[in-house]
Length: 367
Image 1 (tube, rainbow, N blue to C red):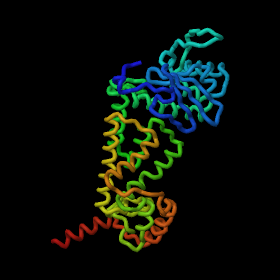
Image 2 (spheres, rainbow, N blue to C red; image 1 turned 30 degrees about the vertical axis):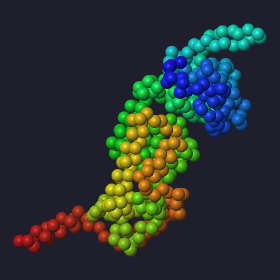
Image 3 (tube, rainbow, N blue to C red; image 1 turned 30 degrees about the horizontal axis):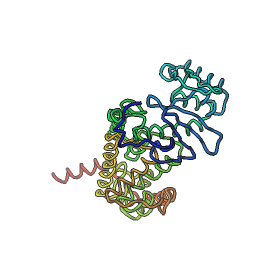
Image 4 (spheres, helix red, strand yellow; image 1 turned 135 degrees about the vertical axis):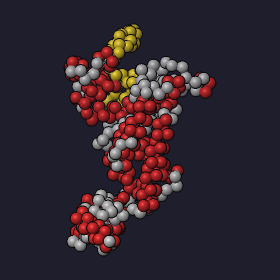
């Protein structure tokens, strides 16, 4: 094991479970470890108990352990691994490691060399057999590896400084490049935020409740910070067929083109110029904040990334959205489109022909 900081500052734990400083319980999974960097993966509500090894910045299991994890026989695991390697999905040389383990057989300790398979192989097999268990194991393994990286018990501080993590030797540098590439793209700011959420979350799962909640709420958090209203509330209270341009300050074909039905359900279209500048500065500041965290080699779970929005807004002394708001997006859309139906009947449009005619008349009058 790599050398860490002086041992006088790190008293050895009296019990294996104390290796991370305190007992933990995560998502009904219990974690224990010992001086050999063995981990035991247990799920409380299922009959699963699997021995894993942390080595070379990843998690390793034997075929037998994978069979226990995914509730199949060992030959099924062997068959899937063979297919994975034969199909070129993974290379055996990069995912298989021979390790010597000690097993107690009767009264004797017997040393055996056994093939272990890394996290890439485990997850590839898992998705072919039981994707739900594979996803849960990947999330657990990612969190465990993060603990080892941030606490420094399995990997030394110097390697951390070099950015050599369980997610690739240049993980932080590459992640920073991806974030900056997203920021420079033509995608709308809310799409950029959700793209960065997906890139940065080490346990990203597009189908999780956290992801769905983040995607549905992130825009509202920033709108509320600037205006005191969610996006739906802005649309619902601003759309008015009796106002000039239906209350819109901008739209796709502004300033002289026709207002379209698709324009009236976009909250940003009702904001004043000052509010738009504030919103854009705030989102840009949030991106800078995330980049700063990445530069200092912080990693994020989905839950941590979702919480980072409120942390940033609170630090910047903005108002924090306390709930989901009083108006649903559907209710706002219906109201705005009803107002548009009335507005569109009398919407005045200046065509290119009208503009050209007016210009000619103006020139004639000057003569």
